[in-house]
Image (tube, rainbow, N blue to C red; front, side):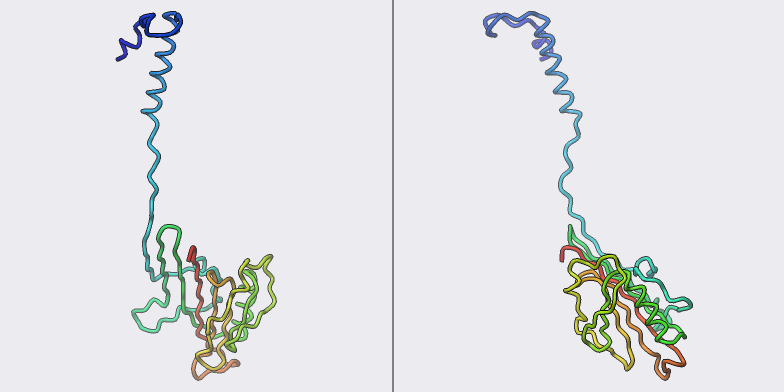
Length: 203
């Protein structure tokens, strides 16, 4: 094929007169274009990624909240980690859930003040301690655009004196639940508490 391209074509096959150098230039351009097309990688096919993960270790970075100083991981059973990380995704949709249980000997009022301040940096905090949302002052620069959709989701105290705070949006939120340990009161301390972070996309 190359030899035919480089030959001077008969005058009857091409309208108008052309010099041999013009045909050589045209042939070189055609060959270069063909090589460039062959060397160009094919466009990748659209990919769809899906997966699930379950882990027993959760960090403060995963929760997006600080751990109260001196708090210890609460294990309901000897072989329990007291922590869980779940993830499920497919394409552009998915969710991540991080949760951890801790215990502290500090008074519940001290933990409540600590986490009100920590949560307030993420938006308007709602107090679900009564089963109904009560907005608390916020120190965040801006609240999530759909913060108005945030609710207690029927979350009610499971034990007397439990304090429940929540911040974020309906699909992306942080939650803190503080429960006085049985047989203790606010003055003597003793608190079990849970930290939860939920993140979802496209759901």
